[in-house]
Image 1 (tube, rainbow, N blue to C red):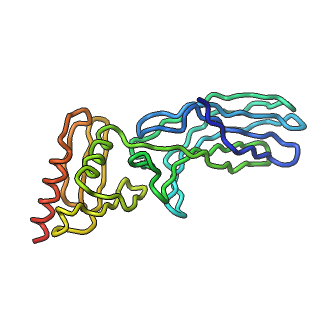
Image 2 (image 1 turned 60 degrees about the vertical axis):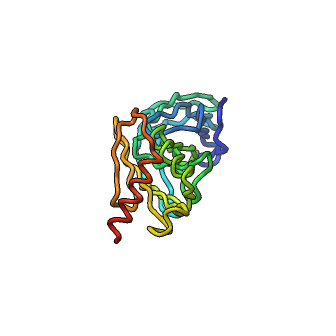
Image 3 (image 1 turned 90 degrees about the horizontal axis):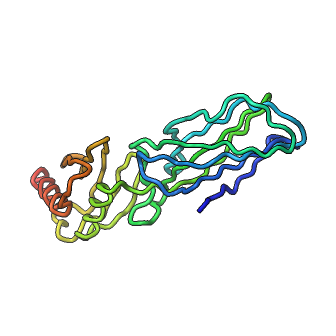
Length: 223
């Protein structure tokens, strides 16, 4: 299925228009987004100086760039010409997770910004949002938290999530920060910034037992 951007912004009256199309906006950190940037020429020929793709994250009102990729250099777009430029954009492993348990985390967003530059003009671009889901090991750890009775409260772009603590741990804390650091071959789960466990990403882990152990470790620290 093809997902089409709602944007069609012209660079001035009679100028070219750009429309970004993603093959699939659902992705995971470390994967790549594929699709095409569709250009439609305006009333006259123009020299396209470059097309730049930027991976952007938003946390409330704060915007941060995760990476930039120059998709195409200089070329002439003729009046009325339709041209599709294939695109591939890699997502770094530190790309924030925007969807947990299949639902969007409020306040978090990740998108691809397509910027088109022509002589004497620049289209700053709009965001085409993507849904970043956790990697399998992260998803398994998050599912273990839900199974134990933790409830997601909020999240931020640092890959940290705030959870309401399950009833059996209420004597330890009422809320706990849950963070992930993911590398090429490992995932590290950190609770409350102090209790942590690092495992191979492909390892079969009893994450419920790990979370229980970490929570009890936090209880020992806070005594």
